[in-house]
Image (tube, rainbow, N blue to C red):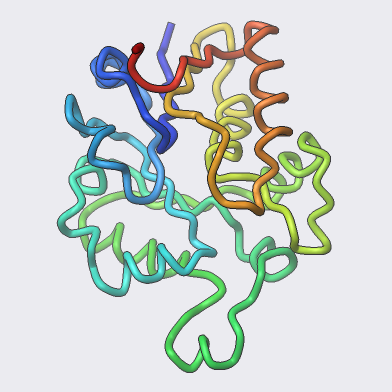
Amino acid sequence: MIRVAIVGNGPVAKRDQAEIAQAKVIFRFNRVPEANRTESVATTHLVLANSTKQIGTYLTQRAYLADPCFSAARTIVAPHAPQIVAAYMRKPNLLSRLKGRRADWAEACARAAADTGKSFAIWPASLYLTACETLGIDPVPRTMFPSTGFLAVQHARDSYPPETHQIHLYGFGFQGWKRHDWPAEARVLRGWADEGALTLHPVGDPP
C-alpha cells in the first residue's frame, strides 16, 4: 500500500514526524512550523493558500527561498481555482490593492515554482464546491470557508484509490482561523476515520 501523509500545522509528535518521512506522498501547508520539521522536512506537495495575504507576503518577500519545506517540495499547489477566488473569496479593499495586495496569488505561486525547478498545480473548482457541500457550507456569503487541510483530504480521497493507498492525517488540531468551521471538519474527518477511509493520528506528543 502507498502511504499518503497529509500534515497539518498543529503539533506533530516526533514519532509521527519520523513516520511521515517514510510516506510516498507528503502534503504540507503554507509555512510549516519549525517544530513540525525537527525530524524531517520531507515534502512532495506544498500547498500554498493562494487567496490569502500571508501567502502574498511570503511570495513577494521571497521568503520561500529560505523555507526548507518549500525547497524539499516537488510540486507547489494552489488550492483555489481562479473562478473560486473570483466568486467566493473575500476581496481586498481599494487601499490594500493600491499597496499591492491581490485576491489571487496563484500566478506568483507558479512563478516561484518555475524559478526553483518545481512543478505547479491548481486544484479544480469542483474540489472546493464538493468540500463546501460536504461541510454544509454555503459559499455564496463569503463568511465560512473549508480549510486548506480539509481541501487536501478531499483531494486525496478523490485522487488516490483506497485499494492501493492509505491516507494518514497528522497535526490536525481543528482550531485556528475563525472562518473555518472546525466542528464540522472534525466531525467529517472523524467520521471518515471511523469508516476506515483514513487514519487520524492524535495531535502532539503524549504527556
